[in-house]
Amino acid sequence: MNNPSNLLSGRRGFYGVKKERLSEIMVLALPIIGGMMSQTLLNIIDIKMVSHLGPTAIAAVGFCSFINFVAASVFIGLSVGVQAIVARRMGENQLKKAARPLNAGIAINLAFAIPVSVALIVLAPQLLNFMLDDEALIAEGLPYLQARFAGIAALGINFCFRGFFSAIRQTRVYLRTIITIHIINVAVSYLLVFGVGPFPEMGALGAGLGTSISLMCGSLIYMIYAYIKCRHFGFGWTMPKRHVVSQVLKISIPASLQQLFFAGGFTVFFWIISQVGTDEVALSNIYVNLLMVAALPCIGFGLAASTLVSQALGRKEPEDAHAWAWDVAKVASVAVCLIGVPLAIFPEFFLGFFFDDEELIQNGAPILRLVGLMMPLDAMGIVFLNALQGAGATSQTMRVTVVAQWLVCLPLTFCVGPLLGLGLSAIWIVQVAYRSVQAMIFMGMWQKRRWQSIQL
Image (cartoon, rainbow, N blue to C red; front, side, top):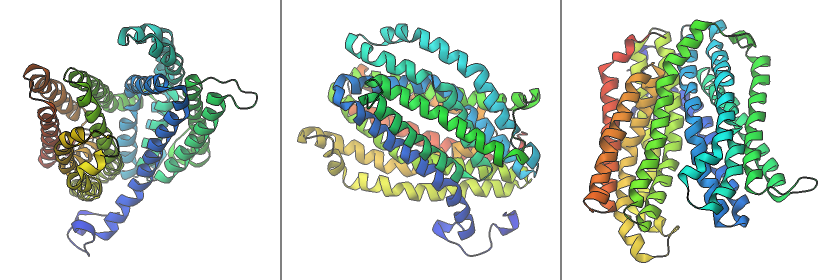
């Protein structure tokens, strides 16, 4: 472990970060990044599996996957509380209590996510009829959406385990399990989508069932592994104590609301762009997907920062906690340059992968260049957001993100877009400015160090 006296000593490695600290960052972050990259690949495979059913099936799977993400975001946010509190206990050397927040996260998911899933399955027809006018899209998407809703509790539990294993610095367990989940998903989905052997051909429904079944298998794998390997951390089947549940909820509810508002904000963002034009929606879809690719390593580094910060605070070393966030932010910003700089230098080349229309490529290139240049600062914002959450400042970060997105970015986007007709460039200048200012706000919050006094 590092301590404040070591911060300015020793040989410097990558971008001013000492080599031993860089090693700790990479050991934590790389398995998470690998797991998330595999998830991106799996999404592409899922779309490919249903592509033979036609564009309606592709559109239905894509749209309903996003609805499921919005519905599950509340339970995904529980992982923030689990990771922050577990890491704090590890730093305090209270190893026998470390898994208690995980026990609470699992219990909360079982108690609330299962009833919510049942309710959403029943209400799914009304939900899709409210959101869509296309009967074919509804008919194709409804069974897929209901199948995905069935896996919400398992998804929430899996995220809690990701937070736990990140907090105890065993992210390789997460990587191995997530890859196993993906293998199960591909195998089961293939059997059910195409009707191989004795299995009926289910189409998009089969893809949804394959995903939910694989998530449930993942939860079972995590639980068996934790019961065998992590009982000395306090993992078990006993009911969690009320004060532990209260701690997890106190940290997690703001993070869950943040996830919910963020996902809903992107829905509104694309609705606003749809009022401008179809080409604008197509280009924005590419920009957002490229941003998401860049965000994957940033989230991995952010989760590493959350663990390192919380453990340092548990050791009563606030200076070390402060330094960890900056070290991780430096590494993340340089790493994401590997994506952002090529986008900024060769925007026409990358847009050419998606479009044949030369005029559309030329119109979209300046915006993609701007997006690429913004990525390193956005990476630092994601790291500091996670570092603040690791310190327990989830209420503060939730207020910043909700205000910045809903009260500033979205109204300005509507004004410069549909209202004033300034075009897609103005819309994305607002988006880039919003992300950049938000990143700087998180940096400022980190520098004020009010998070140091938060007790978990």
